[in-house]
Length: 191
Image (cartoon, rainbow, N blue to C red):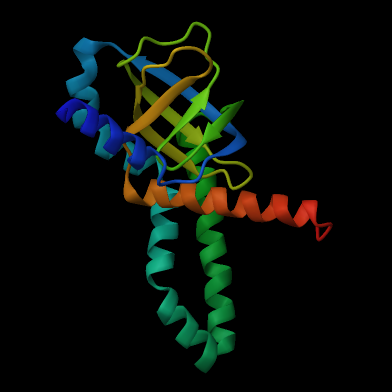
């Protein structure tokens, strides 16, 4: 009975986030079971380095109320601040690209802030841990996460993000929302 309840809770957790078909830059690196503990220990430092742009966006979002006040009282200063933010963002993108090997291989995935599904040949063993470097397009935000392969009967491999920083999860949520909005605008002839 307890196992069934855990499975139902897991399914509810997986459905909390909207899923969308997308093309992303992707690098997958299987982690042997003997190296899992080290991968988990090193994760925070490596993911912060790779996801620097996401951290900048999270800081920007936290300061949004201050920015709105600034826009109201000092619109010229606010406009200049936006230019400086854009310059910092461009430098961060260039830095990340140089540090982490440029563009990643484009792959079709079904993405959510909880995980992703994709066709892999050969499919990885259920329960195996995979290091995932993800690049959201066209924004070029990079995300490093560790994912666990879920049990599947057939079809694409499902990977649940086991280690994912909040700033990176928010980047995925923003990306999916923006992609939905672009697709709706295109469908309605607004783009």
